[in-house]
Amino acid sequence: MVLKILNDWLKRSNKAERLWLLAKIEFKLRYYENKLGLLWALIKPLMDIVIYFVVFQIIMQQNVPAFASYLFIGIILWNFFVESTVGTIQILKTKQYLYEYSNMNKIEIYVSTLLSNSIGFFFNFLMFIIFYTFIEKESNGLSIQNFWIVAVFLNLFILSLGMSLILSTIYIIAKDITQIWTVFTSFLFFLSPIFYKLSTFKARLPLFEYGNPVAGIIINARRVMMEHTPPDFPLMGFDYAYATIILLLGVLFLNRLGSKAAEKL
Amino acid sequence: MKTETAIIAKDISKTFHISEDSHNTVKHRLFNLFNPPKRKDVPALKPTSIEIQRGECIGLIGRNGSGKTTLTKVLAGVYPTDTGFIKINGSTMLMNLGVGMSHELTARENIYVSGSVLGLKIKEVDQLFDEIVEFAEIKNFIDTKVKFFSSGMMARLAFSIAVKAGADIMFLDEIFSVGDMKFQEKAVKVFEGSWIQGKTVILVSHGMEVIRKYCTRSAFMKNGQIEFFGDTEKAIELYKTDNQ
Image (cartoon, rainbow over all chains, first blue to last red):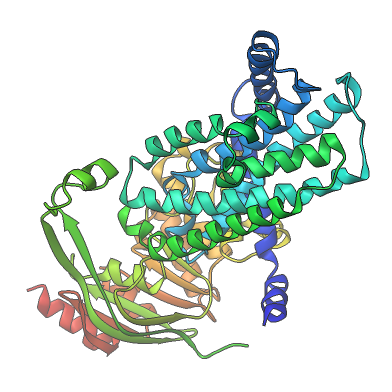
């Protein structure tokens, strides 16, 4: 069954090409239309890092080792999540031209947009590696454990895709979901271990490591990139289950509400 | 595996619920939990069945508001149906004046995106690219964003993509009103050429000449229902009496 579907998919493999084409165009639209271009995608996380570094390391003196890198990896993962959820709430409206005149499957629109965000993430991630290996003084260097980042990122991708599906389909019937989700993400942001010392975070908010799906992803990304330990497998398993459930919910929402997009938006 | 039927639709219908005040925010919904909005139901398409064979050219006629556009959108899979079921074999494309292009993209990008949506591989679009540009007469504006195009240029581009790239099943909504006389002549030539062979076409038009010329069977619609489906001459006759 699965093999048959895969085979069928590959044969008419213009789908894979199409996803990549749409992702490339989306990426170009986002970064080449403004003057700073791609540079901006790289500057923004750096600015964030400077701000949080000043606040949490210099003013509040948290004493986290290699804090700039600690922030760096947390922020780029978080930014991917925000861009892929807040940034896609109105996707069914902005990309209406793709599905309004043909029977193209809507999920492709989401996947291509997230792929485009992944390209952005990839550049940020390269910067992180360069920063961590050459500039960071307390760096442990690179290790074979780093490859786990692929699994961690895939987890984030699934989670973001699911969330994006849910939010953008709710948008069809409730336009103010944009504002609600923006508030909610800033709430999640402060309840994520992005700039706190991990031990403090775990002690004060014991359940949030599990409750906030992005928290576990950030924790595991740091383990594999900076501490050179394998990911915390129970936490990773939990986050994968979390993300899968959200994705299934998202697909359900898309089938129920999303099919009405052409007539309601 | 090629099946003979292009579209099978059984008892499909579509009703639009139009609420008078828009309950489309969370706040509005919460504050008006016990005060549901006044709704008006517009039955745009009453239960209808239709079967279209591969390679047929079907005419769809009827007065304004008779449900032609809704029917084409349901048959193309753009709107979900409320009742019944529908099976579409192949990719579909709906063509009317505001056709599916992004205003933010250039003509080049739009050609690639539309071609890809219609099921072509990038290489195939590469091969068709010059033909499309040539046919649309937009050679000097390939890398211009479509939003700066005149409506005529836009329609020509869309028509050219549709003609050259083409989906398996094409819904053409009043396409003969596109472009100037020269372009219209070209469009008609396309229709008389080999292009139409092997494609399933549903032609929506008020121009009876066009319908008579190209359609083997036609459907006449009235009040959201297909009143008659069969011989083109008879459908045109019914339409003419309805207009009196």
